[in-house]
Structure formats: C-alpha cells, structure tokens
Image (cartoon, rainbow, N blue to C red; front, side, top):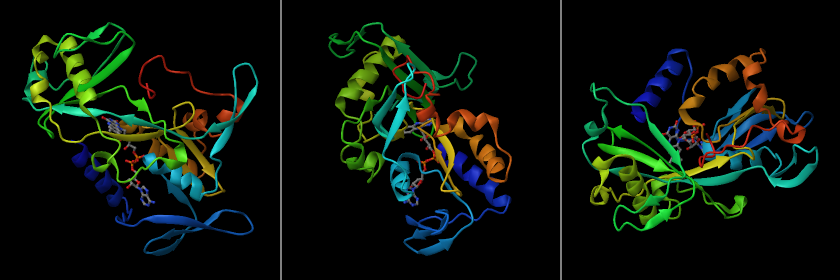
Length: 290
Ligand SMILES: Cc1cc2nc3c(=O)[nH]c(=O)nc-3n(C[C@H](O)[C@H](O)[C@H](O)COP(=O)(O)OP(=O)(O)OC[C@H]3O[C@@H](n4cnc5c(N)ncnc54)[C@H](O)[C@@H]3O)c2cc1C
C-alpha cells in the first residue's frame, strides 16, 4: 500500500525532527549574487532563506532545472569519443497502467503468500484475447501484481515516448486528472491480452478491465538513469528517472554527502557523466528504467 508506506516514511523523518510543510508551491530561487548559490526558495506563501536546498521533484524536475538556470540542451560524448551537441537534457515517457477488477487472491502463490511483482519481457507474438488478431510480433513487456488497495490485478505495459517538445509537455494536471496522459482502450486490449498470454486463467477477462483513468508521465535523463548531483554550490538535485522504490536508500546517501562525506555509490550518477561519455548501458528491455 503506497499511501501507508509513504505516511510511514514521513513519520520516520518527523521522529528525527524534520518538519514537513505541504501545500506550498515553489516558484523560483533567489541567488546570492556573488557566488550564484541559492540564498532563498521563493514560494507562493513567501520566501524561505536557506543554507542548502534539496530538490526531489519527480517529473517536475524539468521545471526546477529551469528555475536553477541549468541547460535544457546538453552535450554527450559517444563511445567513439565524438561530442554530440544539442541533446535534450530531459524527455518524457507515458506510463500506461490499469486494473482488472477481480479477486486479487487469484495471484497468491500456491502456499498463499504475496508474490513479487511479475515482469514479462518477450518477443513472442502477442495475439488479441478478444478476436485472435496479431497485436505485435515485436518486443513487448508487461508487469502485474495482486493489489488489495485497488482490489484487483494491477499493472502496466512498456511506456511510450512523449513526442511533444520537452518544454511544451503539460505535466499538470497530473496522472489520472490529465486530459492527455492516461491509458486508453488500446492499452487495455494489449495488457489484458498479454495477461491472458501469460496465464490461461486471465482469458476472456477484458470485461473486468476497470475503465477509470490511470497512468502518468515520467521525466527521464538522456540515458534513463538518475542524476544525483549538486549545482550552484548548495542545490542538490535528485532526478530519479522513475526508479521509484529502488530509490529509498538514496535519501540517506544524499544526506551523508551534503554533510560532507562524498558517496562512491552516487558517483556514477553525476551530471558530468554525459559530457565525459561515462553513460550507463542502454537497456535491451522495452522498459527504459530496467
Ligand atoms: C504511472 C506510474 C506508475 C509507477 N509505478 C511504480 C511502481 O509500481 N513502483 C515503483 O517503484 N515506482 C513506480 N513509479 C515511479 C515512482 O512513482 C517515482 O519514481 C517516484 O514517485 C519518484 O519519487 P520522488 O519523491 O522523487 O518524486 P514524486 O513522487 O514525483 O514527488 C515529487 C513531488 O514534488 C511536488 N512538486 C512538483 N512541483 C512542485 C513545486 N513547484 N513546488 C512544490 N512541490 C512540487 C509534486 O507535487 C510531488 O508531490 C511509477 C510512476 C508512474 C508515473
């Protein structure tokens, strides 16, 4: 249960003396004129002076990047040693998700335990469970799990790239409230057919697909791996590239780094890797974050 897990994490932080203020929108940063460091955070409820700012804004990182006057376009060194210029720093992917409204217990393991999230990537031809037509004979992928919060089988498929120019992508209203970025009928057809491909128990199940809007966009770096780095002396950016729960331990490493202990585990994720050509491997999976 994501909501309960996040309230649990918030409580752990508050028990350590952290004060969480919600409902405040950051509008910009005020700089120290001589050094460029961030002297204050400008919000819709006034200015907050600061010694250090940490930005972990998920898909809104594009806007914080602009507020910090960081480059929208970057140079990347290729494996051959050439410098390719004018590459977008950010790109958006649309994550499509959905729900089969059936008893989630159907996916418990044989001994009644909660299974891991199942991921299937394959190039086996995928046929429609509705009419037998070929959906794709190219690489495809899905993930799914029993979900007692949504009361069904919840999951998604490989995301697709948002082709709108990065600066024009409308991030808000976000997720299911977005008029543009929600899963459509094509997703439902593909995902339920893919579930039926994986388990015969899901054949003829399109009727249980929950039609409520679902999904959302993620903001990714040029190599689809996170950036953890300090900018303008005291602005630490955690740009997660949609890695979700895998990122839980990062907060502690970043705290150590900010208090003076550089973390070797964070080294591969510096912004300078693009210009130095120290990129992460390109995924062969249909998921950019695998
Ligand atoms: C459809 C979808 C499904 C996903 N499913 C999974 C999954 O099953 N498992 C998994 O591990 N990961 C999943 N992810 C990825 C995961 O949601 C993200 O990696 C994770 O939420 C990033 O956490 P974060 O705290 O860095 O950013 P976020 O959770 O995005 O939080 C950023 C916060 O910044 C706030 N904000 C934005 N702009 C401003 C501003 N100007 N002022 C103040 N606040 C602002 C936002 O309101 C938001 O609360 C999914 C992502 C999507 C889109």
